[in-house]
Amino acid sequence: MKLTTKQTFMVTNSGLGLGLLLCLLAIFGLILSSCSRENVHGSGRIITEDRPVVRFEDLVLEGPLEVHLKQDQRIPVVLEAEDNVMRLVETFVNGTTLHVKIRNGVNLKSFRPIHVYVQNEQYRRIIFSGSGSLTVNDTIASTLFSYEINGSADARLKLDANEIRMIVNGSGNIQLEGKAGDYSAEVNGSGDIDALGLQADEARIRISGSGEQRIWVLSLLDATINGSGNIRYKGTPGTVNAQVNGSGKLIKL
Image 1 (cartoon, rainbow, N blue to C red):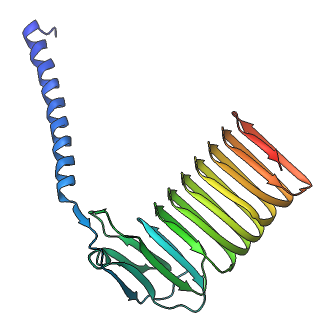
Image 2 (image 1 turned 90 degrees about the vertical axis):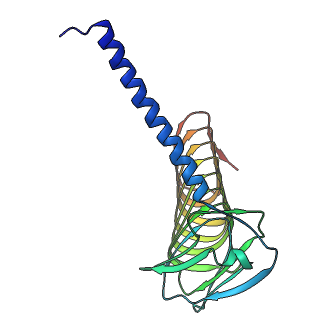
Image 3 (image 1 turned 90 degrees about the horizontal axis):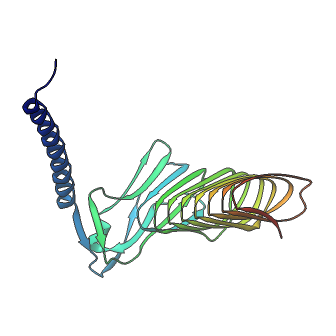
């Protein structure tokens, strides 16, 4: 069937109208979402609060948090924040995972640092999504320790583990000290891992992007670089396997 000029015009206009309607609905949805978020300005009055927790092994952190870890007998999580911000910090255990996060639908503005003090017998896996920091002052001993950053958070860790896994997605930075039997790391983005203070028997490292890894390795190094990132290593590993796709470099210190 051949459409007349008038029919073609009507079909075209109908398509344009539908597209415009969908676009307006999307904009309206964004406006409603923005309006529904609670904007909170810190009061300036700092308080502390204890949050009892049950047994956990893993830790998920979300938000602009300054987290302090200690390995010892489990005690309640201690929070330090402004009084009107404290109510927005959620702590709960789901399965074997402790969650510490800012309540959904909240925009924090001009607030003091939110400090979170966690003490537990064992840490296995930690995921940090946000822009804060994670600090370990005393060495954490574990069979397996895994840490993942999604965002721009920083971490300073002292570890003694059979197996250590590090993942940086974004621009976060990790500084490591201690010992590892098997060390593996992924840097996706512009993040940085400084593990020159961590003695690893074997290391498997993958860089995708412009990030960098520095490592101290004794026996085996597997290095993969996709992009302009660099892997710098010290030590005299008997086996070094390298695959470089891009302008990145594997550099012996």
